[in-house]
Image (cartoon, rainbow, N blue to C red; front, side):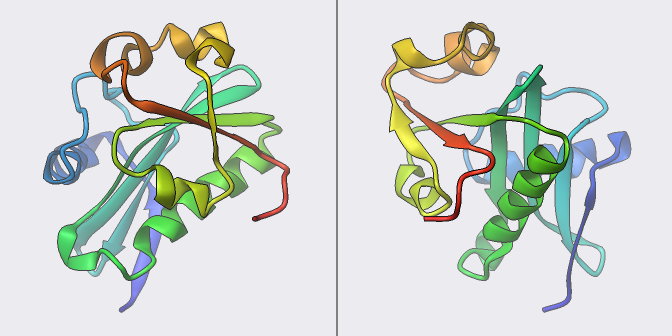
Length: 149
């Protein structure tokens, strides 16, 4: 498998939406130009996506989705790893995410469950936190510079 990860561009949005819909993930609040989103491709096929939504020194890791035919092939791990490297290079301190199904997966990447009340206001005010994800969703946090667990 010759996987290539690159920065997403506005013209990739339809493919990104398709991947997110396959994974039953939210698309309502996707930014138009997909800043801080990366896509994984095998040849010309889009096989994965992940993004960051920044708020000063913190960010929300969001929209991590992999085509079902490519799951179990480390595509998601490579996408998350790429965004962790970006976060570190850009001096971000903490990453948060909201999930209803993938908490065990993200725990393997150093994320830990946190109380919704302990989440910074900037993250609490996102559409994902306040409107789109159910209140039963799990919120997780990772310090950007922590060692891999």
